[in-house]
Structure formats: C-alpha cells, structure tokens
Length: 82
Image (spheres, rainbow, N blue to C red):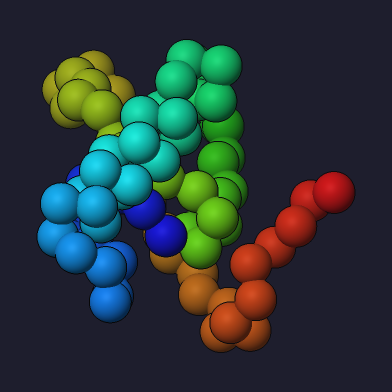
C-alpha cells in the first residue's frame, strides 16, 4: 500500500525507495485516478482500505452532521470489484 505514511521499500536503498513511492503516489492521485464525493443527505460511502487511498476533507460541522462507522472484515484479501 502507498500513501504519505509509507516510509520505504524493504531492502531498497533509501533514495530509490523514496523515488518509487513518490512516483506511485503521484500516479495514484492524478485527477483521472481520483474520486471526490459531493455529499447529499443519506449518502453512504464504502471503500476497501487495502485497495484505496482515502482522505477526509474539511466540512462545516455546524451546518452538517457526520456519522462515521467502521466495519472490519479480516479476510486479508482485498475486494476486487471486477
């Protein structure tokens, strides 16, 4: 998995490891590879943490309520929608 928290690739030199992770992060976050949800009342979003990079964005907590619930399925295998 990649993300800003990834530190390196085990067994790789630090500079090569960082370059690879930076390249993968840049590719994964290109606009054509991202989805930004425009929320409507009653919406539910589900994602596979093993197969997606996700980030919450700021929102008006006075105007909008948010209920966050987490469910974990420990199969160890990412979900493939294809």
